[in-house]
Image 1 (cartoon, helix red, strand yellow):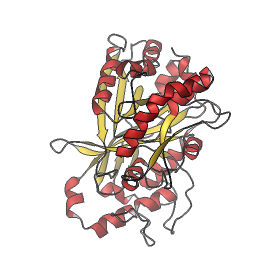
Image 2: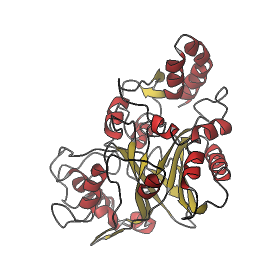
Image 3: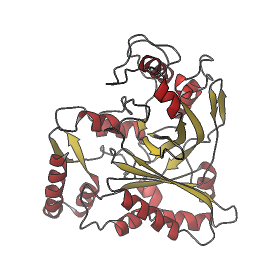
Length: 373
């Protein structure tokens, strides 16, 4: 990772020269989109990225959006950072929704306020995006292409409550204090007396990219940026549908159960995340893919950006967040988890973790978001 940090700092000093050689529009895009690219190995979910590439040679490469696809917000399909902020906001019914939208649509301005664009490098740069709940989005004049209301679900192993919400901010940075500062700036700039309540959750990398259960997280994420964009982004708008769920792990169960039992629940080996050739139809892998065959084709995909959070004295678990071009991708997965699609089997992952909060959001494309400013 020291090679990554050194290369990033060197490249950050070269940005001005690069930008002057490009058109203003292209340079601005490249400056926003510089992201590490793993050479000679797959770049998949952040957990696998950290797990597999701790000592790999790393270079920097300017990421370019697929031709003709409108620009997305920076958080949508960019790769992970060491820390993330999940800011879940409920707005008062009497608040001026359009004024709230105007305030949070200035998110990139707040990011630049926290970290000077002329001085930042890969250690303190922030990739952030803002999304809106379905009711709030309609109030501000948004017209989503698809219905993204999040229904309450219940299965034999637990519930998935529908928690609602009006505004959600997802931000990623290697420096956690920058994320805390960003949350402060966002809340300070909300219209007076507009916020009913909010929750700010801060996540971290655990054991080079593992979930608190000890399993590598994000194994099935698409490897390259173009694939992640294809999965996460609506090609006409640049927008993305997002699922957020707060899962509280039962650390005592995780600690006491044998690896073989935990692996049977997940459908993967604990040390290296290898898919089990023989696994239960109730394993997490089987529920997500639609069957328990070896390397079964996935009917739907999402870009996972989940990370661990919490403390031992309070609660700890996984903040699940995923991006997709359609909310139907989430519907398939959630229905399968509670036995509401194809069969009545539930996901064994719910034996070690409890879902306490969840909903869907729409993250407008960059041009869509500008309309609210």
